[in-house]
Structures are given as C-alpha cells and as structure tokens.
Length: 199
Image (cartoon, rainbow, N blue to C red; front, side, top):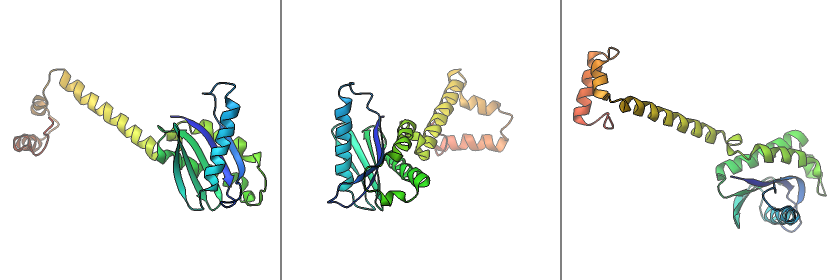
C-alpha cells in the first residue's frame, strides 16, 4: 500500500483551473531523473480531476496502476493518488482528515485565495508520511485488525490444548469449574449436534 500524492485545492468551477492550497508527494519509488516528470503528471491529473468534481461529490478514478480518490466539500477539494491496494474506505477517511486539518489550521482563508498557495504544503507533507499506514486514518480498520489478531491467538490457544493429546470431552469431565448441570448440557448439546459441533 502506497500513497503517492495528497493535495488540497480550491474548486473554481468546471471551466476555470482550480487553485492549489497545498500538496505533498512521495516519488522516491521513481528514478531520480523521472521525479520531475512524475510531479508534473500528478499536478496535471489532480487539476483535471478536481475541476470535474462538483461540490458535494466524491469519486475514485482509475489511472494506470493507481486510484485517484477525490472529495469536494463545498469548494475545498482533497485528492489522493494511491496504489490500488490502499483500501478505498481508508482513502476517503484520509481525505476527510486532510480537509478537517486544513480548516482547523487556516479556517476559511482558502476562499479568498486566487493563486496557488504553498501554505498547506507542510500540512500535506506531514499527512503523506502519517497516512502511508491506512490504520492511521481509519479507526474501524485498526479495530478490525486487532480483532483478527485476537481471533488468531484464540485459535492457537485451543489448538495448543488439543495438540497435547487431550480431548475436550476429557477436560469437561475432569473440570471442577463446571457444575454438573453445565457438563450435562454440554453432553446433551453435543449429542443433538446443536452446539459445540466444531468440538
């Protein structure tokens, strides 16, 4: 998963070029002499897609091996160029956080900008480093990954008990923690194949 470019723009309508409010790029994967051309191409693609994204709209556009995600919040447009492995949900979380962070720092001053403004470059530079990991933007993805790891640990624990040659039935019979009623319930449920089918 790789974020190649993050940028913010002022949408000036679909006939006028948008105004850049800040950008951050990570072009280290390209050769040194190619980086200038790659930056120009990123700017061209971003300007073109931003101009064609109406207020209130969000979209994803496929460009070669990349997906370009864009959202237009009443004229403040966030755009991200990422590889196809980066989760789309996380990408739109990144775009939302970019808009929020910019607005928190600069307020509505972007509405009066008439030429490309580098004030947001530092903010975008920080964001492109931070959001290389999609879990930094998408807390649900982070929680899901933690749950998956916990589930793996739980499966390993049960497997390790069974791997020692002990059968779960023997453990239930020997357990002093289970009441007689619980042991009977386990055995009846197993017989009727309604519960504990995996055991």
